[in-house]
Image (cartoon, rainbow, N blue to C red):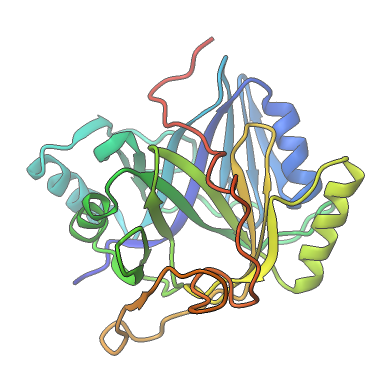
Length: 300
């Protein structure tokens, strides 16, 4: 199957407090504010103009998850496939600036994905500021009542490939052209975005972020640990909008699509299969509770 998606693009989040949310991401994750325009703030960890957009709204929600396409022809092909599958197209204009082409599609269960040409690389690679300095936005994890319905969309519409699954398809992980184990993941639950994740340089970065949370009188939601599917060292916290943010180091990279075979993990108690945490500690009972619904528009 030909990949149409090159890499993770961005997330666009509606929030009652864009400035406070931006400051939180800068303090903890180390993102830099790259632009401010009326009701929105743009942040990035690297040369891209934006990887996170915070848009003022009465209630929090997710306007779109962005996937960076191979090129404009790939955006056209995704559009054609979406029309063929009778999926709703919200818009064929980019949600943010410095992007030439895009299509925004409503997936089953209400998730909204924007497939777009590359965001302009207009920023310096390094910047001065607080936080641990993420390298890039890495992936998002969605919740949906039926994982296999979204599997069909991710593979048929976007040309993504399954990297791993659990035996009962409670969880699926999907990769795109850049080869990282997953750009999109989905697990069974009420529809919405559970978490968005950033890739960091070293384990010391995770320790620094945990210490920053202490200074803010907050705590990690879960971690640190090492995932079975993906192989990355992880920890999670909840942001001011009640969405989970994952901090990740060392995700597996699949070098050859043709040789790789997706693994199946048994969901088991304790250390029997170590599917979710190679190091042993299970997630708290409340781990899947936070998250944000997808919304089509902001409310004043």
